[in-house]
Image (cartoon, rainbow, N blue to C red; front, side):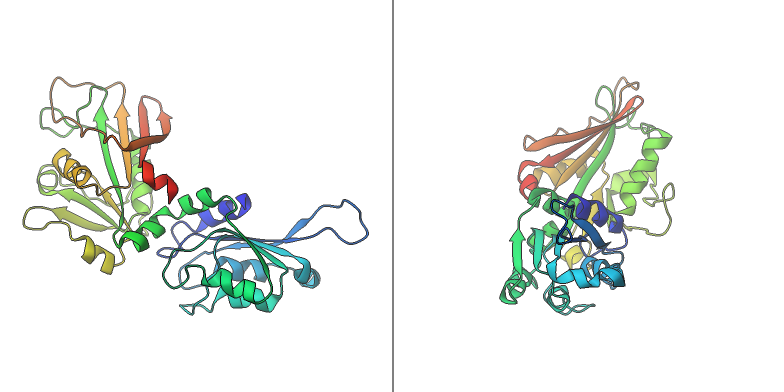
Length: 313
């Protein structure tokens, strides 16, 4: 299952808006070889939306010389196989057709067209199904997909950079806080988003491009400027299939999102070598925020926070 998760991440950008999924097919030791080792005979991941799912690609990778092993094989898949016709046929049907003996599923798919139906279909076909292996890790990998379908809104990341003494500008003037390298990482994150929002004041003062020019120009997120005349409409974003939204401030905009409970992650970059005498204070971290990890790049530290309840999803 850890290999499934590793494979799945290769589809981080291409699979959107579908979830990232990895699949591995394992054949048992040959008969008569005692305690011989099982071996992987096929693996795959969901490369691109509209194309074959992880299970399809895993079966396609099996050598003709190994196909006779499928009736005794186990398929591991990080997310429940689909059971409905979308842009591709149901993966559950393909698994049944291929005749594998057992399927191990990382987590159930909460998407309304699946929700256990794929697991049920496999069991009704006589296939042994185990569910919940590395479940937390599997759910966490697709937290944005699950939040989008569960909450009917984008997965929201609030992001800002601050000085060592907690300011986001220098007495109202734009301040370069990120290093060239951490700016590149910011653009990498942007490339995974469907939209980026800033407040009107930030837009007028800084004229941010909100693109991914320091990472890749292949995916340009939608640019949103918020104001009293143009507030954020989460229902419209959901209808437009905006699965992930980054909010980049300023302080008033970020704080309003936190006060409304409209956030899933915080990404806070702190420049330990930079202090200013006065400026706009960085937003306070909510009580329900939990530090998950810190990335250290010279004098710049990027701290990631998640809501307590998001650890369960």
